[in-house]
Length: 319
Ligand code: C5P
Image (cartoon, rainbow, N blue to C red):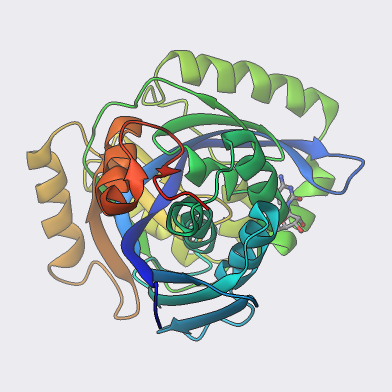
């Protein structure tokens, strides 16, 4: 293919350092208060673009994901820029799926960030955010990264100071949680009184920088009832010394954060050496990725194609 421009990018996973579900909204989505955080575990995406008369999108994906959001993201972004051409993508999946780690959302956001750079189009953060929200509630967060407050559907994002860089251990138990089902189970339990309590306690936790023992994920109640293995894993993380041990998103992955590397290493040995985890349960050592690191990772990946120092990445090609 002539005029092919290519890049290899990393699409980072997220965890929710706190997640409160307040109630159902008239549009059917639920009103949230959450703190998103990017982590070092990432999928690897190769993406190539060549201008052409027709738009064609191909995706090779080692996980065989049906109706992958990446292809939809590619079409949306080309349409928004008024560009046609051939997009070739290859996804190497590292982030467990259906685990609350935002892997699919991050892959879609990665296309929204990379493709304009390759295709020579310019979309503002506001335009990209609107496209991202069409793709899914977690997608807009990956356009900014780091530590961010998410409200509304989770698509209204505000920067928070980077969380302390506590090393973490992620456990993905291989249980696929159905997100709409988890919302449906939680919804009848939400009351006006519980909303008020949650807002106060969420605020206190955010002021306390997220690690004060007030951190909470509302999905734990309903998801733990269905999967008894999850509270056991949460307990195992706490017993291994994690002052913060929580499920992420609607699960099923859990994370533990540790004040020092030594404590994280000790916990890692305890969890992975011996009878700690079952065979289908995967564990990962991760670090929290701050906003500046997230953006410099992106700038490095797209260096050849972008004007330095601008966010979101701005293409150096003229159309
Ligand atoms: O936006 P996304 O496609 O990720 O949402 C999947 C499903 O999760 C929605 O169809 C909805 O049932 C539920 N959801 C919700 N409230 C949110 C986010 C998601 O009810 N804030």
